[in-house]
Each structure stands twice: as C-alpha cells, then as structure tokens.
Length: 166
Image 1 (tube, rainbow, N blue to C red):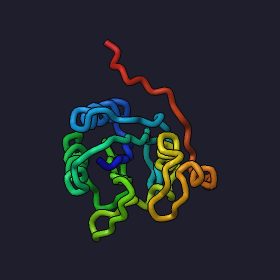
Image 2 (cartoon, rainbow, N blue to C red):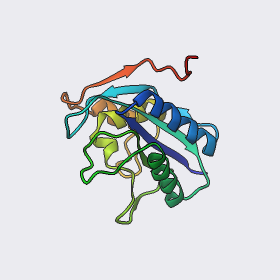
Image 3 (cartoon, helix red, strand yellow):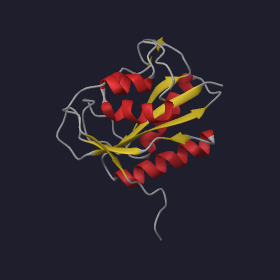
Image 4 (cartoon, rainbow, N blue to C red):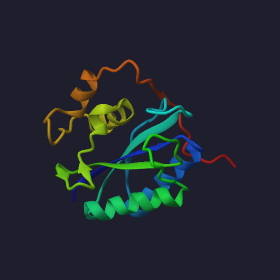
C-alpha cells in the first residue's frame, strides 16, 4: 500500500477543525502519523493566521477516492470554495503525495507544487518524511527544507492540545 501524505490547514475555528479532521482521517484510515502543528500567516490574502500540519497514512484507496473523501470532509466542515483560492477557510485538505506517483491529469497534480513553494507545507512534511525523496526532484524533503529560504513566510511550531477539555 502506498504511503499517503495530506496537508491540513485551517484559519477559522482552527483548533476544533484540525481536531475534527484528524479524527475523521483516523476513522477512515486507521493509524496516522502527524507532524507538529505550525502557525503561519495567511498567504495571498489578509486573514487570520492558519494552523497547518501534515498527516501520513497507508491506504489501498486510489487517488480519486482519497481526493473525493478529502473534498467531502472539507464540505462537511463548512468549507466553501470561493472563486479565489486565497481566502479564509474552515478546513483545507490537500493530497500532497501518493507513494512515489507522479500524476498530472488536469484535475489532480501529485506531487503538489505547494510542497516546494510554501514553508507551512514543506516544514511539517520534512518533519515526518525528512529522508523520503521527492518523486520528481529526487531530493529528500529534509534537504529541500534545509535549502528553503523565504523570509517573508513566517512559520512557528505551536503547542497543540489534542484533548478536548471538559
């Protein structure tokens, strides 16, 4: 079964949305590996800061099935796809990697370009898959992160409580 990597982000009710998304992923895929949670500024628009992380799991589902589940999960969490991709969102789930597959069918692109473009994707990916190689460049995610340089992209690891206080 291929190892799947999914980025998770939210800047609306972000703690609850992140917890709920991870719970739903566990419910469908079982054991998942999670990076730390990072806080970053909104990119491309003025908005509240995002929480971001990357989840990894093994799955026998194909790419369209996983992608459909991620979009349905976003909709179930109130995600409204605006005409612009740069807008506030309750939940943003992106299929980053599917094993070592390289796919560009006009609808789905794997590996996602965001991996090498944004610190909030690359840092958590490097944290949990630092020795894995990018299927196009062949460079490890750890090496890509060490070479990444964009001082305009603020990124901070945050303490995140996975438990709901009662």
